[in-house]
Image (cartoon, rainbow, N blue to C red; front, side, top):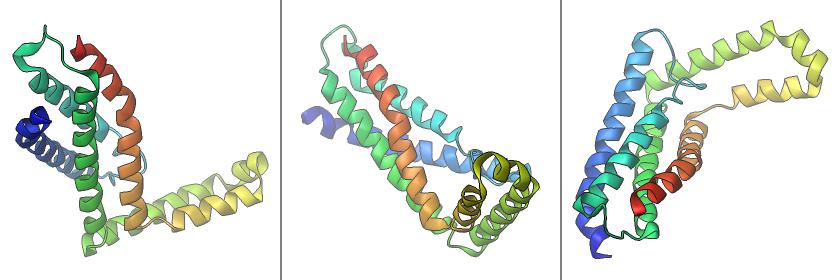
Length: 172
């Protein structure tokens, strides 16, 4: 427990640096004419992975040869992931409630619906009309809450295996 408390400032610092990296990435993507949604934000998970490795190295520190309990390291990294995911999801939620965010969202939904219409025949032929209708409704249902919820849950799910592997590597 003492290890966790002494490492919390590092965890918060790495989470904030990760969050600013995520913001910078989304800004750069948007400045290049790409709305950072629909898979375009997936590379953000690389920043989470880098943060996990950095935190594991800092947590183990100079004790690399000594025994660091696997669960302590695993738990510490997962606290970082949950904290970062919560910050990221909150930021996305509030951004996509803002006038700029709503505009981006409308552009994204409009573009996605336009693209869906282009492939309407193929989708209906392969999957059926019901599936096509579900896709349309799903795209129209994208809002700030759904974006934030997906971001949070995806970060937690995608971080599990790397967290496990990093913890095993640094455990010794």
